[in-house]
Image 1: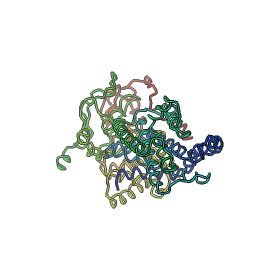
Image 2 (image 1 turned 90 degrees about the horizontal axis):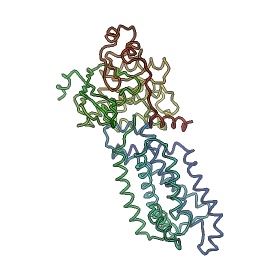
Image 3 (image 1 turned 90 degrees about the vertical axis):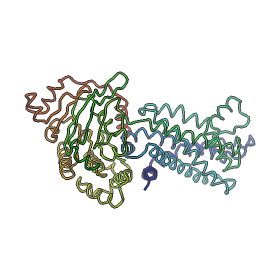
Image 4 (image 1 turned 30 degrees about the horizontal axis):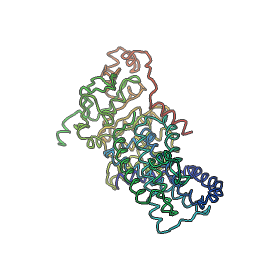
Amino acid sequence: MNVIYVLWLRQLKRYFRSKTRIIGSLGQPLLFLVALGFGLGPIFRKAGEGNYINFLVPGVIAMGIIFTALFSGIEVIWDRQFGFLKETLVAPVSRFKIMLGRTLGGATIASLQGLIILFLSFFVGFKPQNIFLLPLALFFIFLISLLFTALGTAIASVLEDMQGFQLIMNFLIMPLFFLSGALFPLDGLPKTFKIIIAINPLSYGVDGLRHTLINVSHFGLFTDLLVLSSITIAILIIGSYLFSKSRPKN
Amino acid sequence: MENLQARNSNIIEVFGLTKKFGDFVAVDNISFTVGRGEIFAFLGPNGAGKTTSIRMMTTLLAPSKGAILLNGINPWENQDAARKSFGIVFQDPSLDEELTTYENMEFHGILYRIPKEVRKKRMEELLRIVELWDRKNSLVKTFSGGMKRRLEIARGLLHHPKILFLDEPTLGLDPQTRNHIWTYIKNLNKTEQITIFFTTHYMEEAENVARQVAIIDHGKIIAQATPSKLMAKTRTKTLEKAFLKLTGDTIREETANAIDNLRLQRRIHNR
């Protein structure tokens, strides 16, 4: 059996064994979906934009993904000091494989969270526009997961302890989510605001999901795919470089 | 090659090893050798440079200067070969608590590319030695501190290492468990001819177990001999008294660093 596979498998085993964590991390996205979906639905319809729940589902999926993905990346800090990862650092295995195995594991878990949210959204009346585009939607889910797990790992490789974690929550995850167009349409926004959204990689993930799930797109499918995959590759490279430089403290 | 290594009686050789962090010299030009099959205690007050030395010997930290040979291999030239030749039990636990005993062992075996048949046999053998075989399907998070330590020792030996590094293996354990753990280690040293390199703050452990002792203080090795010779030289009756005589009795002030913060945060997070 392969080293990458073992590290991936380990993450999945951990995931399926902590039911409370699965449920816990679904709470916030579902609250957003129900509270905003039903709360702002009537206004959205009056403004002539159609069904807000349908509009919101891709955004809420993206939300569930980035929370899980970034957190699983940042967990490397624990893992390097008190976890199995420390063990792997003295094993005859390259750092790149360790990083890759762990990132793929984290990304798979984040994708599963995204899929669960997609599935649950059917119960509040969500319907995908085109079933044939679903595989592409799943690809977007995985791409977003991979990007943000790798980003989390890259950040964790630089941080010494969990002190900086709250800072990241407030100054990275929240802005990434709120400034991605997850909650509102991008047409007719002020120009500066639009630029900020255009430099947020998550915007392309949300847009790609929206295109594949409800056939509404701002940037266009090709741009979404191109931007998202090139940023993912770049961050994977940066992340594995930073990870290979980082060392456990003791 | 095998013959050459077998004739060389020193399994660990360290020459002029130095580590600087900025202006601070954590390990200052230390040299020592450890004989094959020896039980070697590396002692020193907090912040003396013990863990830094172990990290350099186990490929986790690059030395600023000096050379290391583990089983005849330079760990900074041939990292993977060196890594295969030692097992390690870290000061902080490094088990995956969400996995079972068996899974923790098996993952280690796969990382070290031990063939399946060998792996299975060796796992059973080692888990029986540390008396965890009947708990092989239990999640590690249900274990006591002593059981976790035993499992880490068994795991560290899975790939038939020549050297086992133990960084404070008995920290925080009750005397019964400590006693048990040393019994396993002494047995393994005998039956597998494995060299043991350990650090501890319990001087009576070092006195009872170690055949050679090196004392490091302020990054320098200030004494190396058998426990009885150290006691004779300092005209003391116990190794603890000899240690205090050599290192002085002032308390070492160690400022809290990132790792201490992390330990604290983890204790809070884990209820």
